[in-house]
Length: 192
Image 1 (tube, helix red, strand yellow):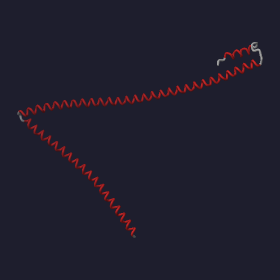
Image 2: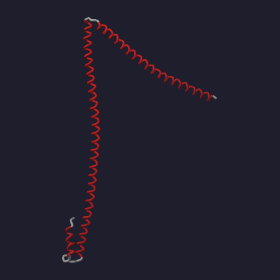
Image 3: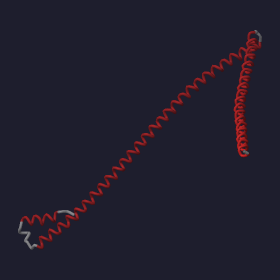
Image 4: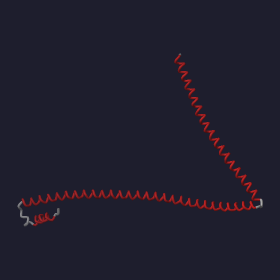
């Protein structure tokens, strides 16, 4: 009975501690959500205040320009200069955008050319490897052919010597017999 009570108390403590942990996680999530809302409200307030100040300043300037005094002329001149500067700025921005577009196009072409060059270099390397492999194959075939040729030359030399020995050992007059003479003379013509 005592053990059952201890187990139940332990289980209850675990549930309570899990509940506290869950509440702290939820509180952290709520806190970050409220912080972001406060930051958005601050930003909105700043932007609205800025717009309001600009509108008030523009209203005062417009009112001053309507009056026909010396200050109004100065403001009109400043406004005219400001308009010209804005037009120049817009023109420069447009040219800058066009130049940036040209730069982007050139960079794209450059990347394309790099890709093509890389592809061609790979093809060249593959062709070099194929030629090297063909050269190696031809060299091996040539070496094999030379080895076979040397083998047959040795066999031919041995056969010539055996045939000469047979002709000499038979004590046949090979000079008198035209067939034997042709054979004996032909043995001399076979090159080693």
